Image (cartoon, rainbow, N blue to C red):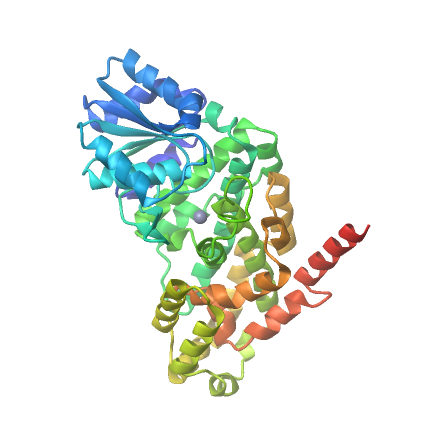
Length: 462
Ligand SMILES: [Zn+2]
């Protein structure tokens, strides 16, 4: 890891104080623990799989260092640990029997469970990551299903994080690939922030931006190496993921790391794609959904950047602009799950602007477009290149590979826009009156997705 970068990021972060990344650093877990919590006792929390991979070793190192320990709390290994509130309640009950500091040994779900349970017990915790699978290690908030709904429950990020490269390179390849996709998604999320900034919707925060964006090309430059278990490539990936979480802490919002590509992922997640009945194998990862979302948004940006938005006929666009009631009706029409529908109406109306406000925004767009277009071109990569990089890392890049039909995928563009008030290229395209034509171009026989769909049909027929 690059110590200077991490140190600089930790100075900006609100919750996390210490990060250690490197080969063999598991052996120094007690030093990190002591630095962060003094002589408090520790309790290892893992599931049967992660306990075998690293938890037992963590426990042993702590014991050998003379640390007072409470018996480890180990969740079953089968079925795959689920991010449900019931698991948090179980862990809280166990943690309340003592005062020990939790040491979470695992990846996304385990970390989220310990993050929230520790918070409910009023305790900080230490996280030992076992896979470079997402950017949530150093992020605040836990993604948990409660009352039948996947939600982000508030809780601080871990006080200390340890990532041993010897453990990470041996993680299941799909998990590493998913982490890569989550990180590569910062290409489009950054572009969305540029748009929101230029239009005066959400100003760029220089340090939140820098932590995530300044070294993104370096962190994501070796997808094939990841696939081959290369340590250097894995080091870059985990550094990027950890910095990305620290960026969210610094800005106190996921804007730094999440744009329209995450709205695709969240919509599919909320609708249970890759979970539950009829789905075999482990649940579809966050990263795989984000990866496909990233290709989709990069492809949309290509269509948008083709146009000269400095030349918009503002009157014509504003005349066709829907009223509030019309927006509400159309949002309700595209959702079938009641809770999702209510949430989408609320979020869509929160970012709704009147025709007069739109005229003002489009006036600004006309002015800033030449500069914004240049900055976007600089930030983005061609969708085809993103797709190739994802493929090299071992990620799916077509909707059918994650169990989604082409029509549902096409409909995701307009539906994803409704579920969050965060301003993205989806809003830009809609407000500029070019949304429908851009999507049509993408799915036309010679469009980006039209060609992908056709090549797939040919492969099947062969
Ligand atoms: Zn993510």
